[in-house]
Image (cartoon, rainbow, N blue to C red; front, side, top):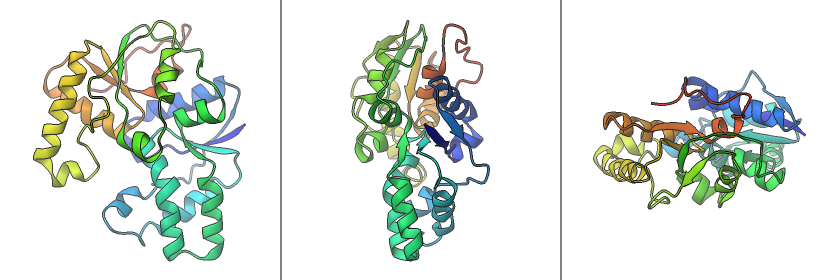
Length: 253
């Protein structure tokens, strides 16, 4: 399959290893990876703050860049949710008929990483090896917008050597929510305190998720508590093998 890879803003600037891991993983599974260099932001932050017309060029750019691939993968439930749901809203309100049609075509083949692996490619065992104790945080967009279900957990359970432990109150939000963490800082901090306490209660050495934004928030909270827990994107765990194990050199915090 010819798969287009969209890095996302946080992936590009703060979590490049998660983007690289996504490409390495899919290439190892036998797929051709296409990375259009002209890609930019998905436009989610504009839309979420009420600027719906402004991201029209970003929506058009995404539809054009990924028009000729079989599928588009985003290592982010948040950005995948924006492409699948918000792009059509912007195109319908402010775009022309060709753009609306182009957006419909590309959104129908856009997937978060675990969705692509489990629901499209039919793969749960990707040949990964990760001999560490891990807990998984299901992010809000993946859980409630994309409804990925237990796909990420099925992938993690198949990883050789992993000690996967359940996260208490896993479905509770970590408190990031984009600008929510800035506009409602006290509430966000309280939610983060609950999430980091839950992570620490598992005794895990690694907390993983499919969204860099949540990992950034949780990782910051754990770091401020001097907790001996690292955050690591799901793609990096799945990309690790016996011959190329993960070394934590680029892990957060």
